[in-house]
Image 1: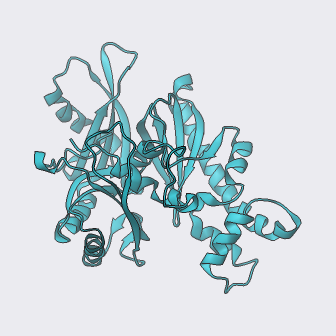
Image 2 (image 1 turned 180 degrees about the horizontal axis):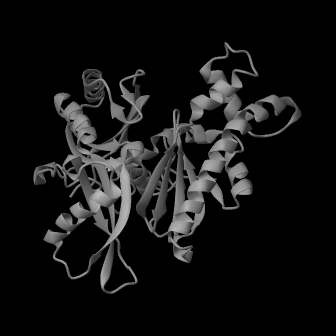
Image 3 (image 1 turned 45 degrees about the vertical axis):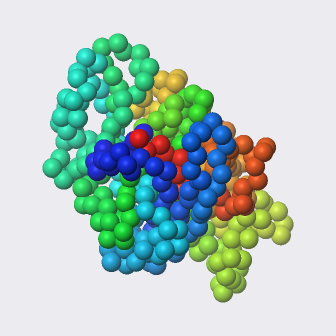
Length: 362
């Protein structure tokens, strides 16, 4: 989905490979591939990295300190010598909904019709909203076409746009995080509905993707930090974050004699996330009248905190749907012929940035 790419349409000369820039509350991650004129060839990594974002600059996707965010973006530009970028927009600020339009409506009239739909689906005055849309293919009704709309408050996007411009960067597109993750991780030929779970440091993002199209997003305000806080109650409170990460990734949810306390501390947090996933899944199925093709048939994990040992097995067993830690290189190149310079555990934190770098800017 070319989410919000038409809001600030770039001129033709900007249709060039761009760096994917994923801005979260705690970090800026960037990723790019080497330019190539042959899309059928496997891509080569060009540059990647991350820059810490101090607390308070961005909170729950809202920019609170524009000047400091500009400084961070300038640091990114100095490190990469980049100019054109594809930028993520926070899921917790997105409004995603489906609607229908008549198939015989001229394309130039669709946007005007969708503006009327905003009032029914977005709790913001339409004059203060920026939105983009995608027409879904292969809808069974010959008279109507299904459309998915992604909307943001104008102010939210303007803050990110202004920060980029002041830093000397040119944003080619803005895109909701979950769609970028889907572009990176969901196989192009897959059919059906997948739940993407991006288990990050401060929150867990959820995207529901049908045949490659993002149709729903939501956020759980629990992330890896909550796991660290729980662990500090059963281990030395002065244990470093790096040591806590090792505990999560090597013992995690595995219930053994020497990891019993770790398991109990972590399972209390993870069970809350599991319950939230089940609730959202049930809502999705009911909303779609339990249509077989819309039923969620798999869960794909990403995000730095998805490295928690035993997490995918726990969710598979407790929810009853196959859950796997995804492959962030799925649509970039084959791991049979390439060894990425980013190790597997760290790669999951780059899923959004990789998906943004894969975006075709036409």
